[in-house]
Image 1 (cartoon, rainbow, N blue to C red):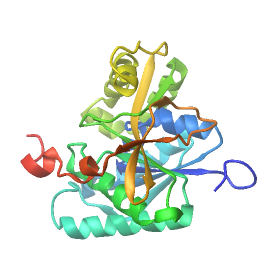
Image 2: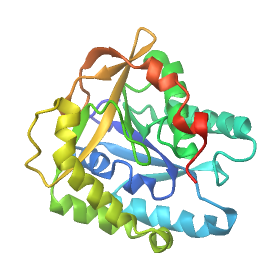
Image 3: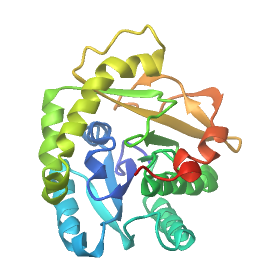
Image 4: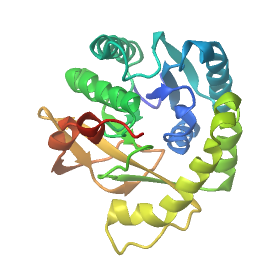
Length: 269
């Protein structure tokens, strides 16, 4: 797809749960939206059956406020995503992600890291890697990974933004009233991005780099598929008008495919 002409470029965001579309990398998605991209959010789980109806309504309203198209898995994964028949859930998830790639033809896929500590997040991240890698030249040009419960060890893409954008993110996030009553993730989003305004540039561009002049920063790991391997993107600030970045020489397959801490030692608690 092209970002000019009659067809809008599409970015597909894979949200493990209803609310992750406004917690994982919302400023990045909104920057692409403002640059003319169509943002499609695919929600993979609506939590336990007792919450599913409420969370379906909440994510629909949240995406409306954010200006994202909202889709939900035909059979949302059970909560918790790591319980029950994991192999069956993984196969169903990969099939549904693959069907979206074929139908939507996104230039970008944004997803959680396969090392994000939460089993459900990791399953979604690994599905993005497997399906995106198998698509070859017909797949997305880039895969951007965000971290929430686990740190990204290889951040390469920084997105700076201001108070107006933060207000917009929080206003959309407030549609998830049921989840915010359990844990006020507004504090998480603001606090993390304040921290990244100081920490993010050093982690992306190298220690000794000055902090951002913007009050908030998101960081992501940019990946591209080359000769059957995943290459890390070169460190950069996002330019929404030209969001596809160059790839560097670092191959990350060893990290991406390695067992996560959760695989090795189990989830927290």
